[in-house]
Image 1 (tube, helix red, strand yellow):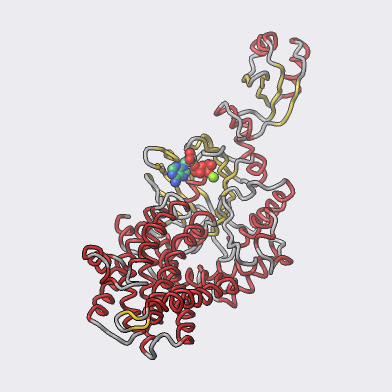
Image 2: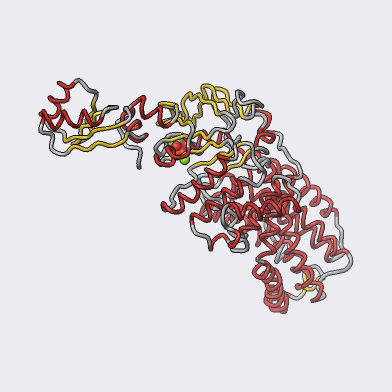
Length: 305
Length: 261
Ligand SMILES: Nc1ncnc2c1ncn2[C@@H]1O[C@H](COP(=O)(O)OP(=O)(O)O)[C@@H](O)[C@H]1O
Ligand SMILES: [Mg+2]
């Protein structure tokens, strides 16, 4: 498979539950070696999309190919080559870390000898070699997530699908997972993941889509999305009639969010300066634009729950 | 699509699922082996010998020997039924074990088939332990009673399939109390277990012989432990075989309907 054949190719993909449309005609392609993100608030349809890619949930419409094969038909051969980190941690609580991976390796038909070596290696990779013989219930949330990541790598997958890999973790534990994902990315792995943490998407993705209510709003690299939709920087000022009048005069694009006015610009210094010079703006605050701003601009809502 | 709904995709994958449950069982064998050991002793002492003092004989058989095969049958029923209702439900709903499994090359058909085989295996394990106790008490005939070992797997598979159907349609774990109380408990009492079916009113008798799985299982185990193979024996074996196959596939189908959405 060359770099131009997509690992995942979705065209007008949709999914309905009864009359409810969870995924609404989305199209995207993921290419070898890419880290591709799905950013969106809860309920956007990210998990539903991942489950279709994992061949565990049939699509309702459109087409979905993974490794060039129809996902609804070639489940077994596709699943053989996938590594999956589900949103909900589903380790076997009765088993130790080592046993969890061993039992999982059997599902892939990996011979025990080979599996054992690979498990030791993976436990080292996720820094759990000291917890090798410890029961799952004794692990912290971050450790469990890392073990699930190790489990997803047991079959040397050609595609990693991670659904909210750092959900519910404290910042330190999240950084550790990001570190591991960075290593995997550097090794050339193709990774698809979902998140509702903006920082995670900005740090890890080569390319991402922002999803909301089952639809893809935009697609692109984090930097392109920010510069294309909000400009590289944002100047915030208090929302007063004078400020608005003044901004209107300046002829720049802006948006009102509650008691704040946001001006999208590639020239924050100049904008801030003319605000101070001409309109008595009170507090003025300049910062880099972020994916959060893109989302806010597109939906009028914040990304966080 | 439509096709994959009806034809279960079964490979040796089911054995890997079975093996996972086996491994868990033997990790906690200390708690798992005591009940099947203690339970028959209690029943034998209290009902067999205690109550038996007053009952004396039934159809020329000492009461304790009359209920001994019923105890085995009940243990076959209970171990598979409770494994494939409450325990399977916990794995499916709370522990998300099935989700973890179907993210691998395993298909859901294999996961459920593995669960069913495991339920039957539990019946086999528990009834074997129980049989050993009964042999030790000298209340069952040898060597015919040893045929209970392979039979327990077949009958266990029947109860596993029935149980899995309930698991597939139950809204939550508490609702599983309904089949336990309305299906298992009446069977426990009215399947020719502690008194012969003949004493029941005619209608109930026909119902028990025609529709209650435990009746068939008791008929078989009793024929074996008393070395008395009546025509009912063959009828019951046939009945059990047909329904085992039926419930095996129906339960897989219902589970797929529940979980593949
Ligand atoms: N099995 C299901 N039955 C009915 N609705 C569902 C089911 N799974 C998900 N949904 C609905 O689909 C929408 C998208 O869910 P999901 O894909 O889990 O979102 P996300 O992962 O982005 O938070 C939600 O509104 C959710 O309630
Ligand atoms: Mg989700």
